[in-house]
Amino acid sequence: MKKLLMIATGGTIASVQKEHGLVPGITSTELIEYLPSLKHIADVDSLQLLSLDSSNMRPSHWMQIAGAIEKNYDAYDGFVICHGTDTMAFTAAALSYLIQNSKKPIVITGAQKPISSEISDAKQNLLCAFSYAASAGACNVSVVFGGKVIAGTRAKKTHTKSYHAFSSMNYPDIAVFQGDRLVRYIDQKTGKTPQFYHDLNEKVGLYKVLPNSDPELLYYLLERNDAVIIESFGTGGLPEQGEEMLVRLKEYTDRGKLIVMTTQVPSEGSDMSVYRVGGRLKEACGIIECFDMSLESILAKLMWVLAVEKTRAKRIKRFYKPVNFDISFSE
Image 1: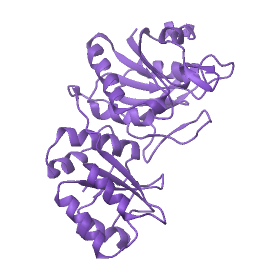
Image 2: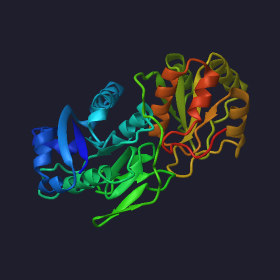
Image 3: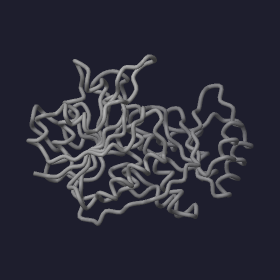
């Protein structure tokens, strides 16, 4: 029987009702007490690392979680992290970059209703998470939710209330649970030595393109950050506003800033070469295209890349190197 460590961070799954709404209040030990059948799946210890509504989860907390896993890595066969759903995909993506080539599974789960509720998805999600963590061949970072196993870089919360809250974006599910049976679709095996990273650069901004967008906001974000994500319409581009925009954006990339283009459309990703509003930007300004990556992974990967590489060329090369199935295309 495998030995697993459950790391509790709060979230809906561990929440109790208070005057103004749900707040985390159930401990890691109490969560396990709700699962008497867990003793048949794995030998589980628990660690109460945080007690947060996941809306309050910050990059410093990602580092805490990664640090706890690194500290306990040799003592356990795998890890299950209980987390709130609102920022679960961001944490899963961040851990995918902070802990790479892990031979041991790092599984993140949570619930749409507290485990203490009469009707809740919490017990099933937890049992599936532990079952997957205890299964042969499980490795790297993944999200287990609603009977699906999703690569940590591909998860996105797509429903605010439904129990099938998470989807795998632009990539197949790693596996699914059909009743008590785990059906695996993607081979996650890794023979490499796990690598832990200890730094993130949080100077990453987001510019969402709207019909009334002011490019001055984009320039403001570029002044304050080392990288800016442009979340564009369609296949990727910016509303044409003359040569001045091209000149100014080229000035920022010449200064070493990373400008990366993604799309607001959930599925299929970007292709800046389709329209002039994207093609000219890519050619004239050195804008990086994110293709089919999720926004959560783009943000986390940029923070990681900015921290580990110091030149623009090396940062771009590292950005396009696939990690945990995060990107299907590259330059």
